[in-house]
Length: 260
Image: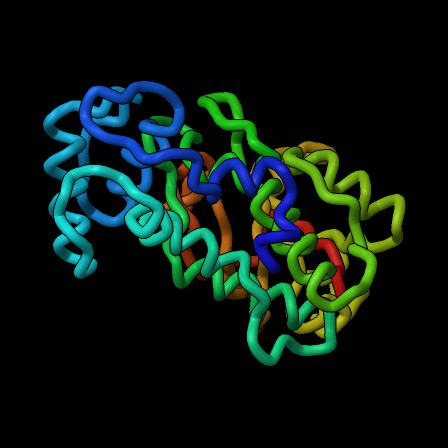
C-alpha cells in the first residue's frame, strides 16, 4: 500500500506532524511513547514528554544510528513508525489467489510483531486494525483479519469476499449470507472435504450456537489441527490477548469462513 493511499486513520498513525521535545504534551507525544515501547525502549505512555521519554528517545536514536538529541525530528519519527509502514506495504510477489495472498499479508504483519501498547486493546496497531478506535472494550481479532482482507484486495485489485467487521458474529453473518460459512460439524462428519476451505481461511471460535468469540486466519489444515496467524491473542491462546502471533489450534469448537 502506497502511503499516499493510506486511509485517514492509518495516515494519522504514520504522518510526521511536528518536531517534539521535552515539555511537549498531547496525542503526538503519546504516539512517540507507544512506538518507543514497541521498539523495546519502554517509557510511561502518558502523553507527557518528560525526562524519561527524552532518555528513551536518545537510546532509540543511538541504536538506529541517528543523532541522539532526545528530540523527535522527521527522521526519528520515520524510524519509530517504520514497522507499521513495513506491515502495510505491498507484499513482493503476492500470489494471485486471494486466500494465499491473505496468508502472505498476514505473515508480513506477523514479522513486525504487532502488539498492544499503552493499555488493554490500545496502541497504534489496534487503531490501525479498528479504523482508528482503541480502548478496553475494543477486541480486535476480527478487525485484524478484516484489515488483512482489505490489504490483500487492494494490492490484487479485486473485491473482498466479505465486507469485514470488528465483530466475530458480524463476520459469521456476512459469511452465511455469502454462502462462505462452513461449520466444524460439516468437516468433522465428512460432509465436506478439508480442501473445501482452500489454502487459507478464517476460523471462528464457537462459544455456543450462533455466538463466536474469536477469529483469525487459518491455514495448513491437517486432520484435526491447523495453523493460524491471529490478533488479540497470546501464547496461551487467549481471545483477549495482546499481540499478533502464530499458533496451532484444533478443529474442535471451530467454524470456518471460505475466502478463496
